[in-house]
Length: 152
Image (cartoon, one colour):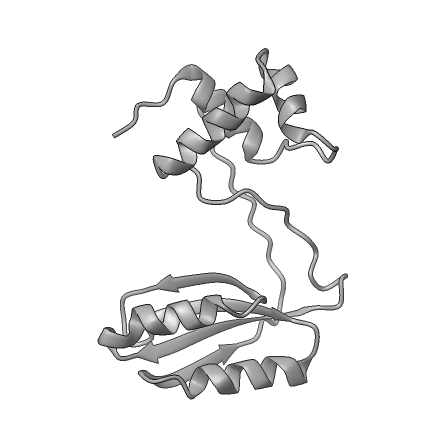
């Protein structure tokens, strides 16, 4: 397993919430970290390859953009979990998709621009081979958890 250097830790700290919005964000990060853009990009690639970094992306207030979110729990035959997860991931509004222990063993979130579109997608997912049951869990109250790990 890769051992994190002090540079790797500093880079991970910056990537968790300090990526600038500009034409060359990695050059800006490099300036902050006292290095060059290629070193930052190489560090990002290395951290991703080693499994320390899964994705880099922005968080948007989906409600203000006109989207609605739904948490969905599926009961899927164990032999079909991978195929169902791959099918779900093809929908552009899927933001999370995780296998879990328990009767409802595949959970995902879906952002859609309207209720009709959401219903159509969930109907398609419900009809996938191996899907035995579905729970649609609409949020009554919005919570936003922002977890950042400060590495030293």
